[in-house]
Image 1 (cartoon, rainbow, N blue to C red):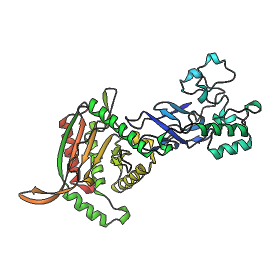
Image 2 (image 1 turned 60 degrees about the vertical axis):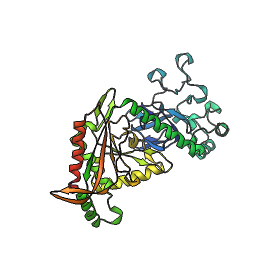
Image 3 (image 1 turned 30 degrees about the horizontal axis):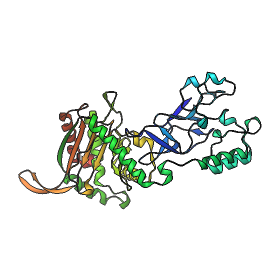
Image 4 (image 1 turned 30 degrees about the vertical axis):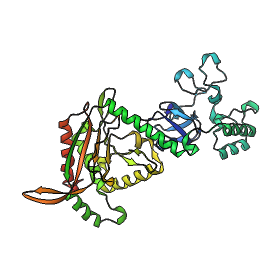
Length: 402
């Protein structure tokens, strides 16, 4: 049996609210397939399954708040058989099923109001009318106590359960439509994460000014060969340059875990995106260094769109190994950001501006951008940070190689 737990979608997340299950008991779920939708302080997130098998139990109801790490469902992995009962001692589940054949004293029963069903969900008897009504109400019969013969679920059982649910207060802000409350909670969440970052991470900061003359000229010529819908933004050049530079300085592509920096085998650049309702979110573009510029542009547009419509996936929030942020559109020339733990670095880019630039012995006007690095001194030092920024600069001088 595999446990499906509430994942952590960032160091600032402590709990989430289940919006809905995408599968029901008895359905087959594949690793990487969307299994549930969870509402966080920032957005509604689609959660992927980390296992392939059959849904054995759904231990959480839509609308419930669930702490990070709590078991929400049980998946019977392929190649295993369904046991007649689930022994409580096998796994300390927050919610446990009680077998009618086992003495209560030998188990640790869950609270009565949220106890799981007392028989195998996939084998429970339910009348056709009750099954139809449960489907219309989006109700999982596994959580309904049957009062019919042999514990069968009747139409009255479904109606009674639905009435009880309607009488319960709806507290999650996302369901109550309390936008202002969500914004307040988001700011509190961000504040807690940033306060922790500044308190625990010894930041050091570096910056350099990069000549973008070659990059902008190449970009203009490249876009003339592309359909309008496929044209590139200069921002994807910056993201790709950061990803490739991390191959040369992998110490910055790491997460701080258990008092040590653990380098990530994959380069998943998180891109800071401002949300229309306020606040920021930084989902990952997976394997950024392996994407062509065209693929990267497509993924960037897709992730921005889904971030602002609340349809991101859990892996996109849990996998970033470094973050890139830019305030160039707001007219900011230099950004010194705060590292988002457990990452150990953040890269900032300002707006592209025309500045006097010496080429050879001549002073000419060139488009330049200021790149900054905020890094964790426990993981790297200024020398390696300088090597990284130099690598970004060098890569942007050969845009055709990105």
